[in-house]
Amino acid sequence: MNIGKQFKDGLVSQNPVLVQLLGMCSTMAITTTLFNGVGMGLSVMVILTCSNIVIAALRKIIPQKIRIAAYVVVIAGFVTMVDLLIQAFVPELSKSLGVFIPLIVVNCIILGRAEAFASKNTVLASAVDGIAQGIGYTIVLVIMCVIREFLGSGTFGTGIFGVNGGGIRIIPEGYPALFLILPFGGFLTLGCLIAFVQWTANRSAEKASKGSEAAK
Amino acid sequence: MIARILSISLGAVLVENFILVKFLGICPFLGVSKKTDTAVGMGFAVIFVMGLASVFCWLVNYLLLVPLKLQYMQTVAYILVIAALVQFVEMFLQKTMPTLYQALGIYLPLITTNCAVLGVALLNTQYNYGLIESLVYGVMGGVGFTVAIFLFASVRERLEFADFPKAFEGFPIALVSAGLIALAFMGFSGLKIW
Image (cartoon, chains in turn blue, orange):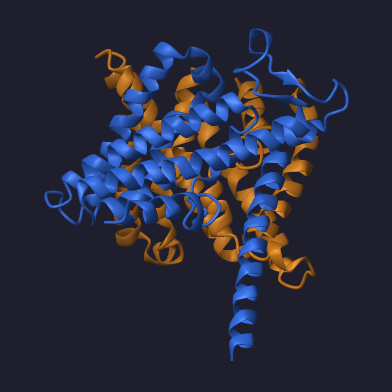
C-alpha cells in the first residue's frame, strides 16, 4: 500500500473527472458558484469514502452476480444520510443543488471506484482511495466554479464570502459573459479544461521522447 | 388536460431538454454517440425505460412510501425499482423480441446508471405530477434525450474529418460541440410562454 501514490493518482494522474472522465453530469450542472462546488465536492467525498469502506469490508461476502445491485444499495443508503444531513444543517445548499444530491447515487465516480478499487483492496486502502479521489473531484469542481463564476457573473465565492453571501464582485455588473453560467458554459469550460490536461500530457510525452532520442 | 400534456411534452423535449439544459444523462450521451444508428437505439431504450420508471416509481411512492411515511427512503426505493425494472425489461425482451434485444443488447444494463432515469423519477415527485403527467414527462424526457443524442451523433460523425488543435482530440472537442448544440437549444427557452 502506497498512500503517496494513491493521492497522486486521485489528484493528478488518475483524476476522476479530467482523466477517467467520470461524473460529468454534476461537474457541468452545478458548477455555477463556489458554494455549490465545494458543497457538492465534499458530499461526494464523504459518500465515496464511506461506501468504499463498507464495500471493501463486505467484498468477500457479496456474491459476484448481484454485486452491482449490492453496491448501489450501499451507496444509496449513504446518499440518503448525507441528503438528510444537508437538508437539516445547510438548507441553502440543498435548495441550490436540488435533485443533484440524490443523483449522487448514479454518479459514475462512486460506482466506478467501488468496482475498480474497493472490491479488490483492503478497507484502509479503500478509505484512502475514497479521500484521494474525492479531493481530486472537489479540486476540479472548484476550478470549474471559479472560472465560470468569475467570467460568467463577475464575482468570487458567492454564498461564502461578501455581504449576505453575495460574493466579492470583481467584474462590474453588466460586463460579465452571462453565457458561461448557462449550460453552454459548462460544456465549454470542461472541454477546455480537459484539452488543457491533454495538452500538458502531450507536451511532457514529447519532451520525454525527445530526451530519450538525445540520450541515444 | 390536453393543454397540460402538451406543455409538459414541449417542455421536456425542447425547452428543458434533459441533456442539454438539465445536464442529466451526460455519460451515455458522450459514450454512445459515435454512430447515429447506435445512438438512436440507445435513445429508444431510454424512452422505454424512462416511461416505465416514471410509472413504477410513482406507484411505489404513492402506494407504498407515502402511506408508510417512508418518503426519506425515496432515493433507495427508486434506484432499486429502476435496477429491477431494467433487469426485467432485459429478460422480457430477450424472450419475446429477440431482434430488438439484439439491437439494444449492450445498452440495456447501462441504463440503470443513467442519471436521466433516476432524475425523471425524482423530478416527478418534486413537481407533484400525477400518474398520467408522470408518464408523459418520462416518455417525452426520453424523446428529448433521443433528439439530443441523434443531433450530437450526426455532428460527431463529421468531427472525424474536422481540423482542430491536437489537444482537443477526443473528448474535449465533443464537449465543445455539445455545448454549441446546447447554445442552439437555448433558443427554445422563448417557448416557455405556456
